[in-house]
Amino acid sequence: MKHAPALGWSDVADRDAILVRRCTSGDDDACATLVADHQRMVFQLALHLLGDYEDARDLSQDVFFQVFRMLGRFRCQSALRTWIYRIVINQARNRQRWWRRRHRSEQVSLDAHLEQHGDRALTDSGAGPDGLLRRKETASKVWHALDALPFDQRTAVVLREIDGLSYEEIAFSLGVAVGTVKSRLTRGREALRVRLREARAV
Amino acid sequence: MNRLSCGAVGRQLSAFHDGELPLEERIAIEAHLRGCQACERKTGDLRELGELVRLGSAEVSERLSGDLDGLQADILNRLRVEREETIPAQVSRAFVDMRLGFAAVGSTLATVVSILLMFGMLYFGPRSERSDSLAGLMETLGAPSVGSDAGMLLPRSAGAGMVADGVFNEEDAALALSAVVTRGGRLKNLEAVLSEQPTVADRDRVLRLLDQLSRAQFEPARVGGEAIAVRTVWLFAHTTVRGKMPLTPKQSGAPRVQVVMG
Image 1: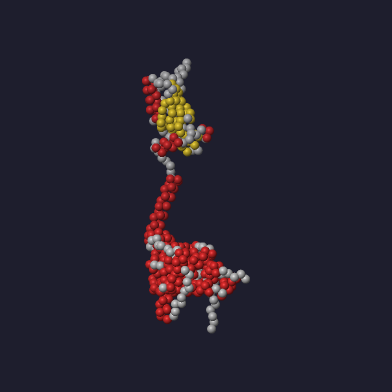
Image 2: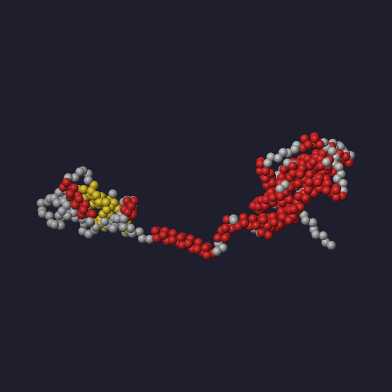
């Protein structure tokens, strides 16, 4: 049996370039393909960043309109996917600011939390249905903890753990240096680890 | 090789977990982890956190699948509507029904042709406005005076010459008259230029003279064969010379009119 040749980075870039060119020339099929290729990732990221289904759906539509409006300025210096991530994050950040101006949420300081709970080891969750249920509950608590993180830390964790982006891609998406991504991930994960220990201790 | 402290490892542990460290640092951290249970536990925590976050994401994203088709349809529909509202799209829609296009093009062409015709008539058409019209008067007044050295034929009285019948009998008189000789050979703006207040008799004679002159016909001034209107000044002189011999009727003095260009 013959194996298909692996898809290299240049193949992806070429495919992006062709798709963008077709979209900018008004090809409806190409626009549909672009949406189909990226809608899950956009919607999912929007949902993870905003935490509200309707908001995420609304944001996803806005993101694609902005993508189509700005597509003429896309110069293939990054992957189309990363470029779209950047748009999603910017739009989500704007919405967050708007939201926070109206609903100031209290955020718990990580250092205070560490002082209160210490740095205990996690216990094993065990196997079987009970273990699985408990694991889901823990996952839900971690997820809520993720929601409580500052926007930039939460975004870094989501892009790394869920979308699997490299530090360089995350840096481009957030518009920051790789070192900043590193520190945000470290702080974000440390906060989640504390929350995880807390969940296990219950 | 220097052994790393737990603090230093802790700062790099996240990047180590993500495989984002250079080989040398990775080897150093792996060596530390083999001898440090606390840091090893932290590494395990990071792995588990990743799994839990992905598990939570899967729970949250479960309901997405059914809605993605709807999302795509919404986006494409709105995109189509936006495109239809762009100016080029509106212009192209205006030409879908060519009956409107033909009417618009026809009316535009008719307007352009009418304007061209009007300018053509103004430019190439005859310019024979009446000399006593306002346009004629303005042209006369606005026309620059032309010297006699420019090959201009001066206006002169038509026929046998001007005779002031019964205006001056025996009296000597000299007065300047100013008038415009139009291209039609008529006098306009005729007036006497008097240096002093005339007597009643003189005023009467001057008025009769002006009356006769206003009905007189002149040959208009010409430049290159074309008649033009000019402002002229006459010196009207009547002199009686008494000789010893009686004069024949031919020699009797008809006033001479001399035209001096003003």
